[in-house]
Amino acid sequence: MGNFQNICLVGMMGAGKTTVGRQLAKRLGRRFVDADHEIEARTGVRIPTIFEIEGEAGFRRREAEAIDALTREHGLVLATGGGAVLDPSNRRRLKASGLVVYLRVLPLLLYERTRHDRNRPLLQVADPLARLEELFAQRDPLYREVADVVIDTSSGGIGSLVRRVELELRKRCEP
Ligand SMILES: Nc1ncnc2c1ncn2[C@@H]1O[C@H](COP(=O)(O)OP(=O)(O)O)[C@@H](O)[C@H]1O
Ligand SMILES: O=C(O)C1=C[C@@H](OP(=O)(O)O)[C@@H](O)[C@H](O)C1
Ligand SMILES: [Mg+2]
Image (tube, protein in one colour):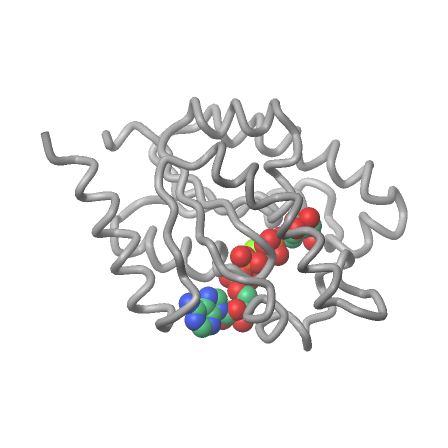
């Protein structure tokens, strides 16, 4: 893994992409960018507002633009939103821009982590656990398809996860 390449984190809502990505970037001395934050900075509104006004389709268009711009940069730790892998062009761009790490977490734990958070419009439904199970079934194959590294993260805290990701990345640097 060269310094030139990006490290891209993919996985479900609540997998820890944003939290782990920020800490990983600090440890590696890299710049951290979260695609959702980039979309919010570009539009000047929060993600739920984009969903309210433009629907999911509008959000996905903005997400694709952000992924396109960010994957042209170098040396980033890039946290994506959970649905970024749905678009084949996003997958191609992420893969071409560097190393893709899938933080794999099962739906029940994702539910525990996201249940009190109102900032994920797709989970504002009567049965968010069932929604997470559906999304997991649909997306797990796509995360696996795009990933260079799959890290099962259903146990351990954030600090140990950051170190595990770092270890996996270092393995890739060895000849
Ligand atoms: N490995 C972990 N152990 C415990 N809590 C975690 C872990 N990863 C993430 N969290 C918590 O889960 C929530 C969602 O994390 P976040 O980084 O926003 O996920 P994502 O960006 O993948 O949706 C946050 O409250 C975060 O602190
Ligand atoms: O899974 C998804 O489709 C989404 C995940 C969110 O990001 P996180 O994965 O960081 O929660 C955000 O992009 C949006 O609410 C849609
Ligand atoms: Mg996030």
